[in-house]
Image (tube, rainbow, N blue to C red; front, side):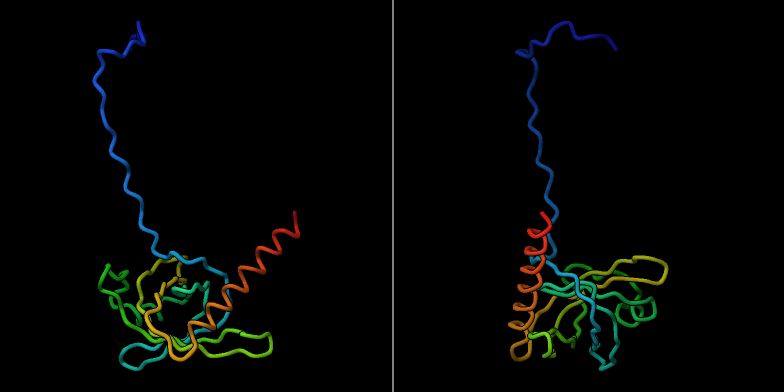
Length: 156
């Protein structure tokens, strides 16, 4: 290739660039790392126990093995948008350190990914809560986020 003899661009044609489409944020709530058990009930009444990886006001990410994924997600294929898999969830959150409360929430499996050979993560988006479930999650997530901010300020 030769060298440019001039940087004069008065005769050059201008080209408009199309902006790259932004990837939709599937979860617009802040997540907090949580380690607790969760029971997931399928539409046929079958209940499976998994571990919670993280929690937000909008949903929960669970960790489970291949056997559980096969039971929850037919064909082990991530659900297509709009073709979510309805489930019911039951887990506890500590409203006060000595007083855990049970949260019952309906939701939809909207995400699945393989982490390792026999570990998978499944994302469940909440659709409806029984009783004060949303308030309990809201308070718990807010407290954990506040504690994390305070811890970050203390270390600086």
